Length: 94
Image (tube, rainbow, N blue to C red; front, side, top):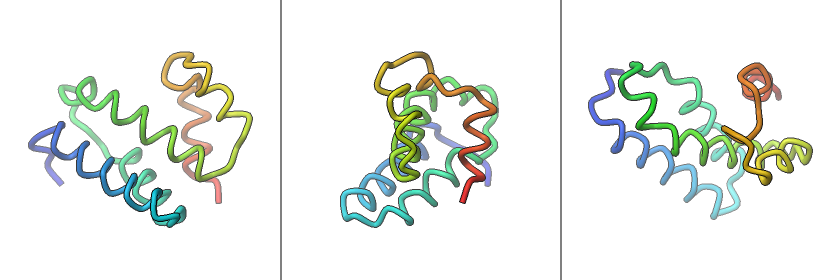
């Protein structure tokens, strides 16, 4: 998929994930978050999607139920305080 508008694609994924989460469809919300986090993005859009990535990362970690990482996110230490390696591990955890 070719990304045309970082704001629109970010808003769409975030909105869908939030709607599923609010409807207590956690597994579906998790899948949307994972798809978004795994999406390859042109570097020019990476900064524009930073806030959305942070929100999606929070929601993903909550759906995974990993309290240690939730605490790190709550502290607000950089991109949730979760390293890239930790994010990759969480994304592929079942």
